[in-house]
Each structure stands twice: as C-alpha cells, then as structure tokens.
Image (tube, rainbow, N blue to C red; front, side):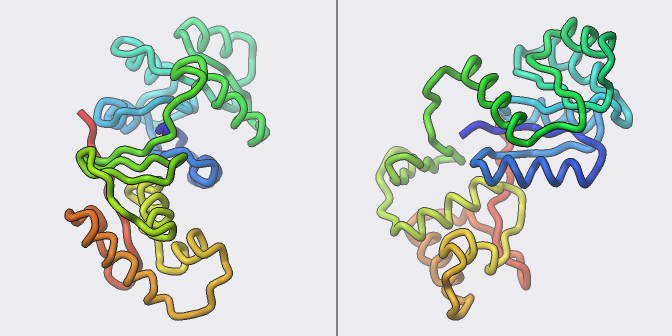
Length: 223
C-alpha cells in the first residue's frame, strides 16, 4: 500500500486531499510547511510526495532540492503557480509531474497512479505492513512475524481501516460506517468487542484507546 506525503499549507486543501486519497486506499501523512515536510521525509518511508510551492519556512522548490540531494523519491508539484517559468523550474529539479490549481481529483488520482506504476512497478504488492504485522489485502490474510493470524472479515476490515489511517483517531461510528457499510443500527459497543478480540489475536497492543473518542494506530517511524 503506497504511502503519500502531502505538503500543503492550506488546511482545507490538505484535508480534502488526505480524505480523498485515504478513501482510495492510500496511506497518507501531511505537512503544513517546508521544514516539517523535510522532517517527515527523513522520518518516514514514503512512496510519493504531493508538494505545494508557496509554503511557510521553506518553499516547495527548496523542499524538492533537499529531497533530491538524498533521494529519487517521486514528487508531484501541486500549486497555484502555473507559469511556464515555474513549471520549468520544477522540472529542472527532476519532479515527476506538475499540476496547476485548480485541479480535478480524478485526474490527480490517475497521475499519482501513473507515477507509482513507473517507480514501484506495474504490480505493487497490495500489502500493509506495520511493525511485525502484515495485512495482505488481496487475499484477506493477516500475519504476525510471518505466522498466519485467523481474523474474521470484520476484524480484518477494522484493522485495515486503522492501519490505513495511522495517526488518526477513528470514532466508533466511523468504524461502524467503514466496516458495516452504514447498515448497522445496534449498539456501538460492538466495536469495542471487535477491538478486544483483535488485541487478543494479535498478541500485541497496536491499537490505542482514545478515551471518549475512539481508537487509533499511531504512526510507525520507519528509519
């Protein structure tokens, strides 16, 4: 499962991009300024960066230059600057694509997919890995240190939702909506029961309880 770093200082656009890409199955982390973007790039293993140019602290060109000094990580610039000069400056820094705002979400999704196919191969493994835990989304199987873990379909979907939203708190209602597809009208405490079963089966408490709010799996800092 590809992980994308969104670097955007406008909150509404950042949230829109994050929600859209997460709904499409990507893992997402976000930065609101250039300095934070570089810190996250160095702390997490990401597969692609969506990078605005007009950023606080360091602008997008400076961020891209810093990334290029250390990595060939794919970079798509997503910016209101649409002049030929701005675009050429980006391509001189070896970006993979340049998308002026306003942009179409479906077109952006296709461009992300095209870049990832070039950089990750035509058939990237549809797996989510977190510490010793691996979810094979295609085969609906879970593994701890290579050993199969027997999960029910709803346990699997709940764990997948938490892993795809690392660092975000998912409320009981959000988990019900994702796992039961809006057709559940019983007690929200069924979520607590599934979380309890997951913890027992995984043998390690990956899932954090946020009292009065919901559950989350924290970001894994990948060195």
